[in-house]
Length: 225
Image (cartoon, helix red, strand yellow):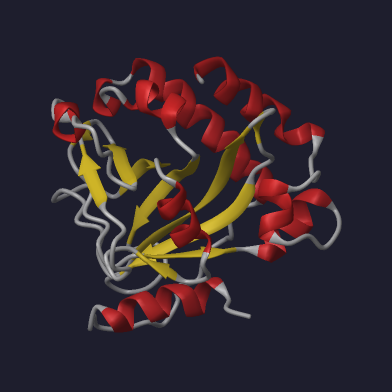
């Protein structure tokens, strides 16, 4: 099973970056990630950086929320962060499944060290793509990804929506986040820690798995969608 270090190392090698050796850091706990995701949703309501993301969220099949995408936080020249994915089901939003995203470079604006990110998965094709282990953005034929920032929400108008829409807000400055080449990987160990027993990513997103500790995040999503 891939560890976070291997995930981000793989992303670095794919981009022919310098070194994939992980830096010493304290891993974000699952509960901190869930609480951070709830804060991002609150920011989404009030932060102009997210444009019409609130409206798009109501139409999304799933959402991946990364509360803190860090530049240089995982290995030299690399970036990444921990997040949660929730699927919009007939009875409401699923429990959160834990995912990590890493890349050699996300294209954060010069001088910025971290960003909040929301990845809206708009189509069943996009969702199936992301659910495949080690999904690499931009490498899967037929899956379209649009990266948006403040003032450009009109770019996704039209009868055929993109499969994935990415929004970001970066430490007071706004702009599109370049995510091509980044790798998304499920984190079953975090799922196990959070739910107190071994579970699979699909059982969390599509099955009966749940936890009272995720209720505030799910309520926040339900209040938007």
